[in-house]
Amino acid sequence: MLKAVLFDMDGVIVDTEPLHNKAYHQMFDDVNIDVDKDLYASFTGQSTINICKRLVDRFNLNVTPEYLVNLKRKHYKYIFENGELDLIDGVLDSIKDFYANNLTLVVASSASMPGIVQIFERFDLNQYFSAKFSGADLKQSKPHPEIFIKAAESTGFKKSECMVIEDSTNGIKAANAAGIFCVGFKSPHSSHQDYSNANLVISSFKEILYANHSQFFTF
Image (cartoon, rainbow, N blue to C red; front, side, top):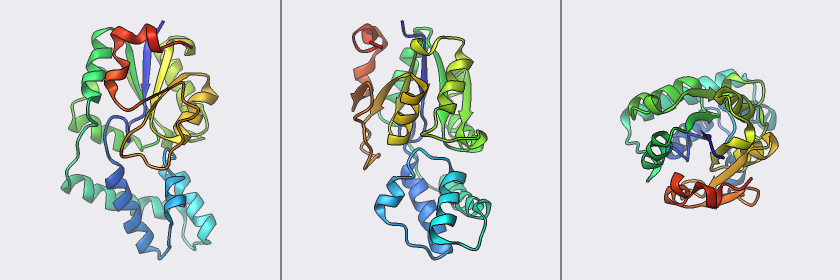
């Protein structure tokens, strides 16, 4: 029986990808590196620090990963405070539906905790969620399962009673490795992602209404 839902944030709750894309590319320009589309797509679902470690190694940069993180976050902060941002269509209704049916909701995102807090305060989401987990605070980021294992443990329920909602290849791999039922949300904002290992693939949150969970939650 479904008792808890573990939400990714970027691409599932809110469409921050255009903001991150712009901030990353401004950072790439700052250090004069050319990141192609395939390499950039492979970053989806990973923490900023791990992405920056990969960049330092790949381009033999004479700066630290932490320096790149700070550059990127400086650009993101400006864009976040001065740009438009919306929740993903239908996600708030889905969150309210699960919450009204007494499910425990947890966010498990590769975003930094300050970034998660920014989003939750901006859209008044704290009232629905029991816990927040940031991959940036963990030893391993997605596709490692650590974040979903910890998020599931925080609910007090068995992993077989939890469901992950993810939009990225790395996130789906992490849910699989954690042994948790995974819904792959095929967002129009998440390109070049592989949903083949998700237990269920959706393009609308209406497909996972709690009233119908016995039909789709078969794990």
